[in-house]
Length: 157
Image 1: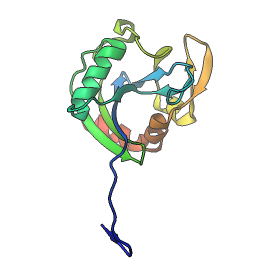
Image 2: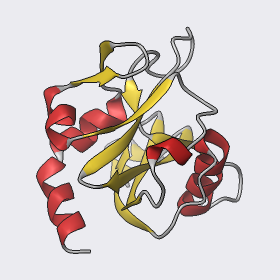
Image 3: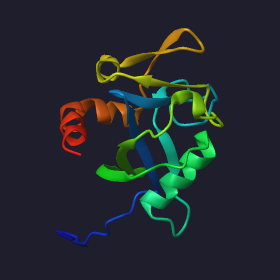
Image 4: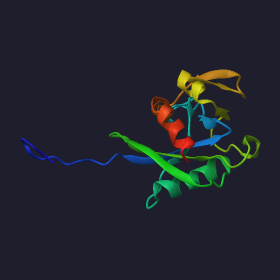
């Protein structure tokens, strides 16, 4: 790319992450992040997944994170979209949650639940464990903006 001053270097985001929108019976798996200072979106609802390690593809990193965070061996995952800014590149995948919520073992975060799209659209989700509603993290805000597309994607798969 060129500017009036000469070539402009395009920078890569500092980190790459991958997250999953996993559905079961018309609801979507979400994670209530820990209330810890210094983490991204503390106390907010997000998606399971995380940072990629060197050499990992987005899908292989996501599968590793799902195994670490909820002891899930995920089934087929379909790439949905990515969102890039100066801080990170976010890769979002969609797939079915092949087991009941009770079969998941939460290793990271303070709660998990299956939320309806209208709950996600409201911007706040009730934590069954804490009995409090909490706001959405940035990744779920992006999903919220694309909810109609998500419904079509799932119905066409």
